[in-house]
Image 1 (cartoon, rainbow, N blue to C red):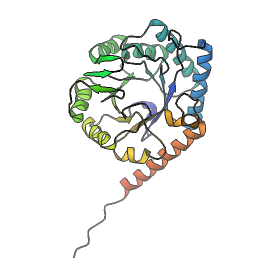
Image 2: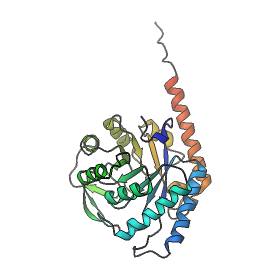
Image 3: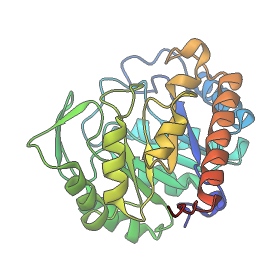
Image 4: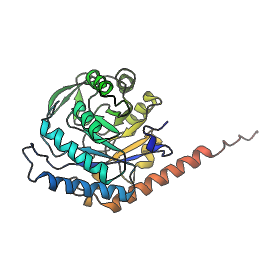
Length: 286
């Protein structure tokens, strides 16, 4: 079953990142919201033209991030941006409010008609550059039920990047807790930092432990590794850094790079289908 109805029939949906410049209220904000909106809409258009299956809006430029709840101006700005993206680009949209404000992400999604949110620490606790961050599943799921928006899916990280565990626990157990106790709708596996490669062995462990819950790769996706990521259990890809002009993180999205990635994904899916459809060879009797 697909995570979203819009992705029915898509074997490996690709989500393109909309990395917002510093938003109003951030110490680094240098432009007004209209200027930020033009940047975000141009990236959204470039991602759609390149063929991605979904978008994810993130307050990426707001470093240093708040560890939990963000200011009201951040929620307002992201809601305005999300509504504009939804109006301009008819693709499923996700919301991520960094560092871990899943409740605000849910509010933005509910107000804008977005389809999913990302939560870095849904359960457990992690040591991060924002300090200790603790899981919010208990509050978030109640909020989702109270808002009547159970259709908004929760994509949750396991062993999230830019963090370390308080105590070592097996990755498969962490994954099962995320799925069975925190009720994540999908699991995200990533490398240790933005843009870094995702470990294939970790991906395979998470994929097996997640069972029927889809597993997305959340960092380091590029043309060269999509096939190996899919072979290791990836059922979705979240891509940002490798799609930027010259591969530089804060540059605009390059439509040609997006198209090349989508061609690589299509080729990997085709190869996978041919392998799955091939009848098993009979062993010759000696």
